[in-house]
Length: 216
Image (cartoon, rainbow, N blue to C red):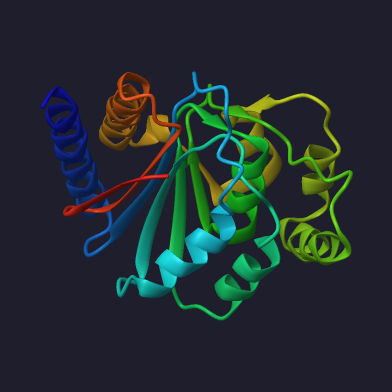
């Protein structure tokens, strides 16, 4: 019973979060990937990129927000994610109020029209040293789009913060401090979702819409 109550609270928080986003971009939709940061096991049995393409394809709305608080995950389908984005008319905004892990960073740079981070958001550079040929080509394509300054970030060995990411990538990166209501709701939602995962000992959570909540 307590588990269902916690899930209900997280879902209610998600709805408030979505309504806040809709006040900025009417008619938009929110997908959220949240993992339990205290879990020792990353979500290595699912490709975020494959799952994301599948869900994005099924969503009728053109304006999409993706909340990313995910650790681990496979990169094998990033090329297909890029191909989807190039052939799609959807406008995608990624929100990461606390952290973008290496996988999440690569996904964000591959698919997002805009990235929303707090000044203090930890941004891990993608690990690109051991990628296969198709991924290397994909990275080369979007590096060309983002410009020479992206190369500095990709070759970095240490995480940077959201403020530095904005300095590197310019107007495509927005600071959440400019949108205090979105910032507040994103942090509260993430905390609520991670609390569910922690207390129910789940490794990952995907919330699709008002009616659906999925554990990975």
